[in-house]
Length: 119
Length: 109
Image 1 (cartoon, each protein chain N blue to C red):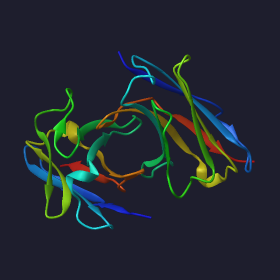
Image 2: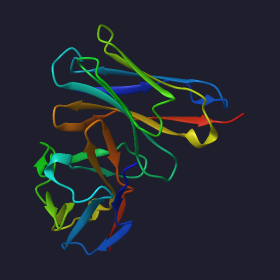
Image 3: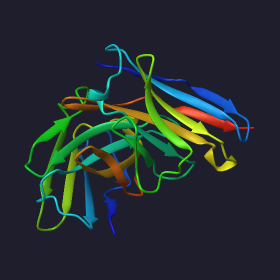
């Protein structure tokens, strides 16, 4: 059974750095073709892809946010960590992590975690 | 930055057929963009329906199908059920980046 779960702060202040952790089970990020991505969704708005890390440590970022994002993996803990710097109220959103395996992009999703940016 | 455009809203009658489309500002959508489709109901995480233009996941109902149509990616629902009322998002892959469309709100009325 494949599961993913996001964890991290629910409230951050403007200019702070957000760190979110995706803990997953049922697959390994050391297996060829595997990847974990992050997607966010502001309240009432559309999905926005943020970043993705592959089994071989290749990383991809949204061009509009790449200067603020970092993504790492801990294969032994089955975790992927996303950091986003210089948070702003417009970054208030539900943040999801999701699995990518070869051409099956984001077939499995976490439940999401709502992050509010406010002073 | 590439923009992916979907119909903001569509309405369909139960039992009817509806096609949602997904266009790219970069030009015609081809299979090389690996179009994916997702369904999202209120308060829930998105659920994957279609990958690689037309491939269904094991859980995707048979009434959903994906294709390329007139330079766009398309998701067709045949024999629409009330439970198909939801937001639908396409996702295109541009080499190093994934881009979601703005979503289509499908109303079954």
